[in-house]
Length: 115
Image (cartoon, rainbow, N blue to C red; front, side, top):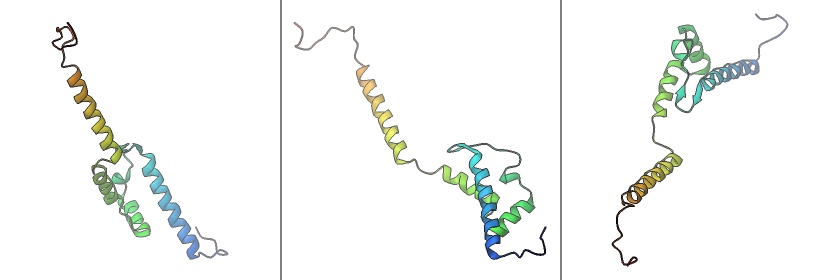
């Protein structure tokens, strides 16, 4: 509700848009437990009413339902550099263990070290 003695300026409108955008982003961030793991609630962006989706699209230029689909498609992208290095180290350690454990410790040695 507007009071008659106060005028609405473009600064106040921009502040309201920013606060609205921040609240939507904060809600989405709070729904993410770990990267790629999200809590799906019945009142999430995918199940919001058409009025809420239209308001976000009108004021922020963001389609809440399309934004969620784009975010899911980005989560299935290529692995980060750290993940590739870690995966490589695990693979190399498995190959090393396969080589070491392929020898029978009870077998008699056949080398020249033992008489």
